[in-house]
Length: 263
Image (cartoon, rainbow, N blue to C red):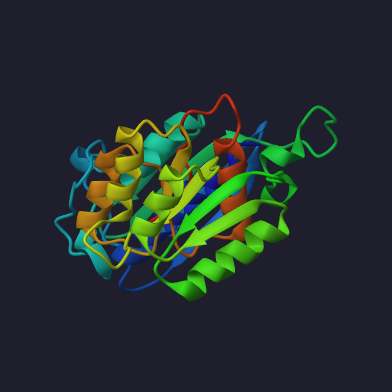
């Protein structure tokens, strides 16, 4: 019983981190009931972490002395996001590690009681959220991605306008285009990034919410996103998780939203 998108990002980042450091053996993902809690555990057979370093691994850009096996070479930004998102949803993240044997990360959240009539399924099921009549603007220089996302959001009842060029989106907003939520790709194929575009709207006093949707997970981009205060999600993101983020961002009381920054 938790925020669907943020919880997915936490687990995705921990699994990704486990694979980066596991050269031999494997990674095991398990979900267990423990009293009134649900616990997701990620085991790996990586090099393990010294006890004196356990408190530091959630710091941004903390790197292991053991080289990661994969991209980012041990970049610790993912664990920093895990800690930040866990705080937002009141999840408890713990770690047990033995040098030379591996590590176990545990994420603990309240358990969903199926028989309890008081629990609202829309909070955990992206497909149940409603984005009917929400005015969404998409900006993506990849026409295939643009059209695919426009289709899935339109099918859910949203009013979607798409632009392949950032300048065209700027002109449309200046001309009075109704926008509740903007979803912008990080790479727009010109001199401006998606972050630049969103900050332009913020400087101009545009009061709609905006988020970045990107396939980039390199250290420079992740650092820029983390420092920008612009919410983001990474590709591939499911249609349900995107719709859920849009639904929450479009609520009148929501001035900002931190959807899934999975890495």
